[in-house]
Amino acid sequence: MARFELVMPKMGESIMEATILKWRKNVGDMVAMDEMVLEIATDKVDSEVPSTAAGKLVEILFKENAVVPVGKVIAVIEDAASAGASAPVATQQAAPVAATPAAVPFVPPASATPAAKVSGDRFYSPLVLNIARQEGISMSELETLPGTGQEGRVTKSDILNYVKTRSSAPVAASAPIQASSPVVASAPVIVSSQPTTQSSQPVSGNVEIIEMDRMRKLIADHMVRSKATSPHVTSFAEADVTNLVKWRDKVKKNFEKREGEKITFTPIFVEAVAKALKEFPFVNASVDGTNIILKKDINVGMATATPSGNLIVPVIKNADQRNLIGLTKEVNRLANAGRNNGLKPDETQGGTFTLTNVGSFGSLMGTPIINQPQVAILAVGAIKKKPVVIESPEGDMIGIRHMMFISMSYDHRIVDGALGGRFISRVVELLEAFDVNREI
Image (cartoon, rainbow, N blue to C red; front, side):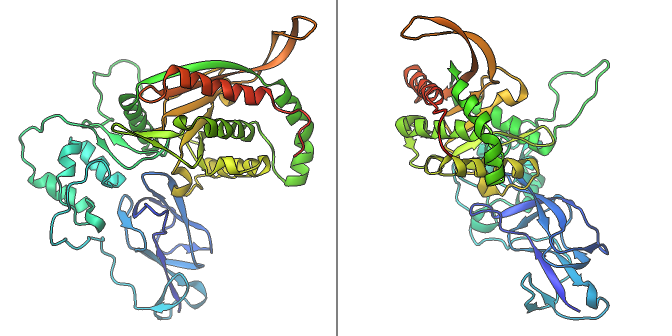
């Protein structure tokens, strides 16, 4: 018989391990090629892992909640056509290899010397962060732990061993625990020294207590971190998008017939934002201590709702280099992947600015929270018909126009009111100047 190894897939350049959330198949179940076998999570996104072969699932090597390195064998599938025989195990490419060893948890070899303390840039898996949070281990305390994982990373075994031998003396309060940088829903995670699931006050009366799911905990920690990091200021403006609405109404049927894609307002907003960011580079930046890091790439994140009601922010890379057709296709692709848990970690990383459409939920405007480590986020509200004053050479008149509020929250450490106001005004100008006769 032929046996095939299912390995933990590579999820991105910076992703070295993932947590198994749920096995969809059990030992003995038949699986088809490309059928989803399990769900995994990194500190960026939740993903599904498909089968690389058709047959019977004969071994599961790691349990749910186990943290597994990329490339490690997690299950073995036996070719159904030759089940019952014995043969060497094959890799994903069906090359013969030695028989799969007995299922044992992965424990990295101990390093000769403890890993050096790394401030702020040390990677911690979601499982390690959760254990640290539950045990009240602060960031400064976590950074002193020697790691036996790859590149000196702290593994589950490392932190559990530390918990066993940890002094019972109280630890001095320090900075909250933070991980590498995710985005609204799939963004860098900061965990407070107290578990977020603990209640700060007695609960009584006719209530229902629901524990946050994993994604909601990530969002909550990320939002708290952002407000603690950046002094938020929000500016508002109103845009007359009548030409934009008329143009879309005129082209949407032919566009869908020709391109096989629906065109929404989002790619048009992304186009305007990308143009404005080229003119105002300090809005396309991040802060590192007293240094300002200007980003040369313009990567626009777009907040997308998932079926669970959480938000995730896929990133349109090099948005300024795409035409409107390219933006439309990429917006639709990423939005669909986000709604169906199909995003790869790389597709939620590298954002330099975020756009969120609060109007899609019926809101006229919003005060969005900055997606760290960015310095600004723009929110577009619902488009509504309103009577407005129209200026013309013949004088002022009242007309019915399609109006939309725009709001932008920005980090007052480097973006002051003048810059924030000029940027949002430029976005308004670009939207209001949209050519109703534009060809696409």
